[in-house]
Image (tube, rainbow, N blue to C red; front, side, top):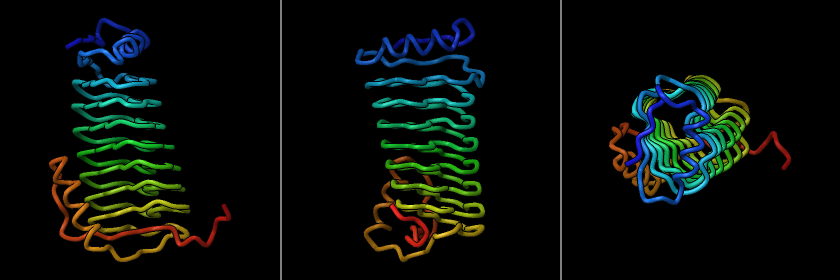
Amino acid sequence: MIALDADRLAVTEINRLLKEAVHGDQAVTILNPRSRHHLGVGVLGPLQLTIEGNAGYFCGCLCEGIKLRVRGSVGWYSVDNLMDGEVVVDHDAGSCIAPGMRGGVLVIRGNMGSRCGQVMKSGTIIVGGNSGFMTGFMMIGGTIVVAGDTGDLLGHYMVGGTIYTGGRVGSTGVDVQEVACTEEENVYLGRLLDHYGLARPPAWRKFVSAQKHHHY
């Protein structure tokens, strides 16, 4: 294992060393992150990375093939434009998480702020707790799964994709409709949460675009 101490290294140096470690046979751990911004940015290729604590804004952005575990929380705009890979955050996440996501899986075990998955194209976002307002704002594709409650304007102006919720919905956004979940979807969602050790809600609700307001 390669250990990088953020108390001794600048963020730019840490990210340079992460890129050098891609395709290597050693996992990398960042120690003492202390909510520093821009950790784990621009990693293009397979890399197993653990951040031992909280990370700040823009954590894990612009990555492809990364397997990232954050043993804490992350700040705004983290996991921006994830192309492929898996990111698991043990606690909570700020607002605007995973905008423009193009693939891979993001798991937030705790609660999520507002506008997660904004204009996401593909991939899967899983929230073990609650999510704030405008979850899935203008999403184009992909899947958002929120086991808990969601705030107002769920899916506001979504173009495509699917949002599943297991709790209360504050309100739905413009051009959003609720449709029935199939038994196959219920089984899939249950297994998905089981895989990440998250509690299943009693029932699921499914929301999609009504396809009335856009012309693409």
